Length: 261
Ligand SMILES: [Fe+2]
Image 1: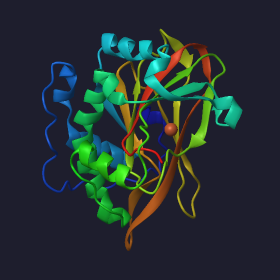
Image 2: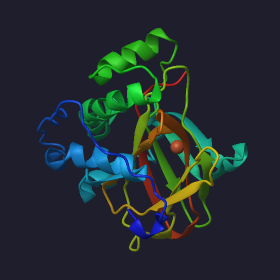
Image 3: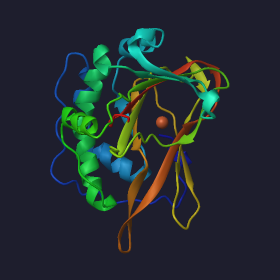
């Protein structure tokens, strides 16, 4: 997290976790997940609007995911962003994340703690809570016509960028998502910073720039976050995008937990 990007009027929230965060189960595939401190990540998410995790994937695991980009049989859809005025670059939705175990494991193992955070936000946002297993969330999505998988891989080369947006794919919106950096900034690419903009009702918007290292994940709101006010909480809409890549190639994995209509 680029702390210097935070203005002096950054809003801070006291953190009062309801209960303890669920422990991430051990896994041979994802040994680094064991070390995650979800209390700290939740505090950072509330203080700054985005939480930056320690590396979630090894270099070899990142490369394994990057290599999937050239395997067309793995994807349900390819989006050339300039055709839709989304920016410039290409992203692809996995047809079935279970076909890539490293992605499936990451999504399944992160979800319970993401749901723990989402469920603390629920009363603050005046919204619903979510089941603590990804399987249950996806079953609910399917019952509501949201059956298409949403994990995606995004690849940007020089001049590529993403406009500010939100990833909403239907009525069921799990409120947090995570993007994992698969390349090493400085070595593999330059530019391509992650940009988040928080709209503060009646006040000027705030920009946050985040520069994750290889394997690090950014946890951020899908559409808004709760901010304590005099009379409870108010919602601050948030959008995210990517600054233009200057040199090299930048690949990220996006994990959105609700499926798409
Ligand atoms: Fe997005």
